[in-house]
Image (cartoon, rainbow, N blue to C red; front, side):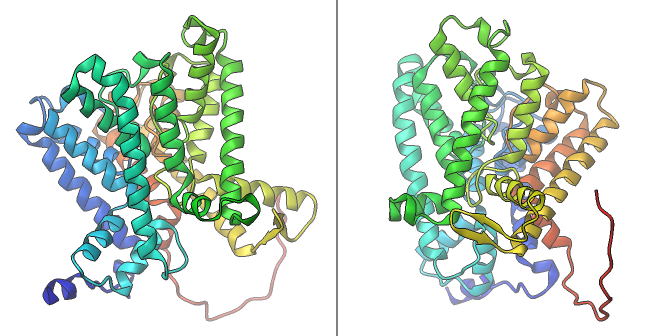
Length: 449
């Protein structure tokens, strides 16, 4: 036991073993391990290549949901179980699982591992990480158990007890972790008019996308005035984005015969509009064909995919709080104010600079990925941009371009999904140096805008 404890105490003093580097290394190892397991003959139907398995494993660990082969038919039950495990590991965090396992074994978690865990869950303090890990697993277990139980009311009558239970469990895991993987070839299109499927699945990925810090705050405080600033921003921002997406999708697609106009009832149209409005926030499920939607709806969907969910959640994207701080900074600049104020609090300049860096890095990654993929992809440009935005936001929605990519295009998508899961700032911290400047220069003026 002592030897195991000593072997786990990694040094994070050097740049190569910094917390971002360790996170990237661990996620990369699990992607390769998952690919090897999915490539085994007992895990698939014999038509899956290693490239297919690698893409699926990367998509599962990064909880994206983009696929190049049909999950339900290409992979056997063992392969589907492996995908579900990879989704769970990637959604809740690999270091979170490691810390919980070590705690169960009675092995003390050293400071270096706490620093890595802090980076993964997006915290600034080391004091309550153990309690946070336990709460993360409790919340995940309760939500996925309840989700499975509700979904069984739909899937068990249709598929029988054993198959119906597995369908319910797989989709509950995928939904809560915002993965978007489905065992149906058309995602959830066959259940477009099912209130049980639409409401249960959407509530699960909305809860998972809020972030565990918000859920803990709501449980402990239960009063709006006493909520932390982060929780207030997430709740208001999430509600506003859902409402705007719901109304926007309904207005733009109501008369489209290939989407909403093809449904029979007013209630079905509202339900489908709701689901398509909330799923781009990194969930990846769909009940309508995104390839048949108007260009305006597609652009709105890409915007929602890039925004994503909340920090310390199972969602991706630049995050809702980033968008809010960016908007507040813009308003403050236009009003010539030097401080940002929201809900009786002010934000430090460090937070604003962090937001600007995150947005700049995100745009750079999206544009670079789009350029690289356009070198070999010959299809529609909007479809390609949609796939890149989906990969960066770890969403999983597709207009069909992913399945048509060559090996180079697939590798680019894998890298974008990988960066999107870790976060652009994690990549920036990994590449950045911390050398202090030895020479200070006088301030200068630069004309901007």
